[in-house]
Length: 130
Ligand SMILES: [Zn+2]
Image 1: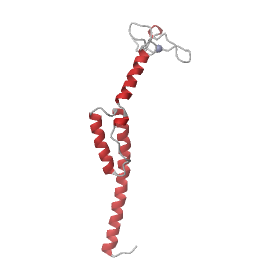
Image 2: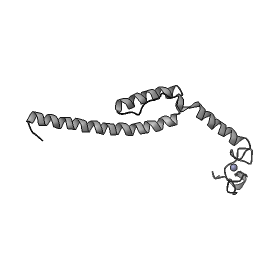
Image 3: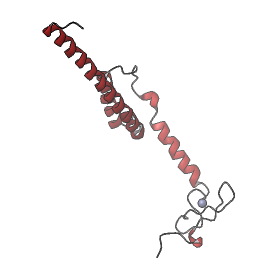
Image 4: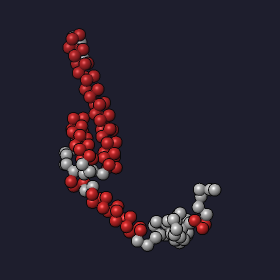
């Protein structure tokens, strides 16, 4: 038995271009979820409820982070907002990705700063003038 639906197992609805839908129908019906009257709008409403549940205006406001310390504070607050259901986990995941990039670039800047400090100290100790 193949997992592919036969014509009898395909939705009888039409695609936007006028062709056959081809999606598997809801069990016991001839139509898929999107072509069953009322179901698509109900699914759309659920999406709307989700968007309202995660209203970004409820999140704590921050100025743009300027260093790793600022970013760590933002991430710490975001953990609490995630645990209290104030932030969409998908948005939190995207922010965490961007934060990771920010922290790596911040780390590079710190290494550059330490290297410059060491060079200055070396010149001072050895009496070398640049
Ligand atoms: Zn369909």
